Amino acid sequence: MSSMWNRTLVYLGLREEPEDGYDDLPERVSDDDPPAERGTRPRPATARGDTEHAGASLESNVRALRTGDVHVRAVSPSSLTRAAVIEVREFEDVESIGSRYRTGQPVVFDVSGADAAVGRRVVDFVSGLTFALRGRLTKVGTRAFLLVPDGVELPADERRRLDDLGYRLPTGSDA
Image 1 (tube, one colour):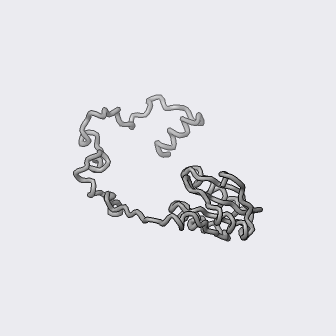
Image 2 (spheres, rainbow, N blue to C red):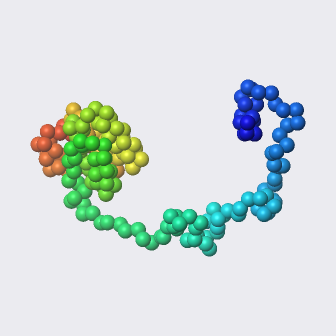
Image 3 (cartoon, one colour):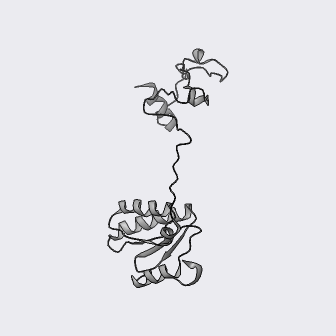
């Protein structure tokens, strides 16, 4: 049997520990010893925190992030207050809910077209999204919910539009 298997059996108490112990184990090595003496390869420059070689990596599919490439898209305030209405049929529809919510647009999503398991997954996902981004989630129908980003208020005309669509919005600042 291999030595690892023997050590596992000893650890589990299924076999007696050998009298001579484990002579094949390496001696304890100090962190102060150079890597050549330990028999290990040195860590790559990025793992040590060296910024000089941050772009170079041992892995070909890893590259350093560039700063300054962030593009912020300006959204007009009138488009933010008009709620998007999304009919959810499958779990992949949460991507459209999340992308609209991240831009600051309120979203009404209806899971009545999806089966119960998908509906629960979508509501769980959106609940986490709401909590993480400090929004508000309100039930506005049997299986319909209103997701409002932090700092966004629905104007009266948008509330009337959603009411005409059959959604029951709460009164006051709850929505």
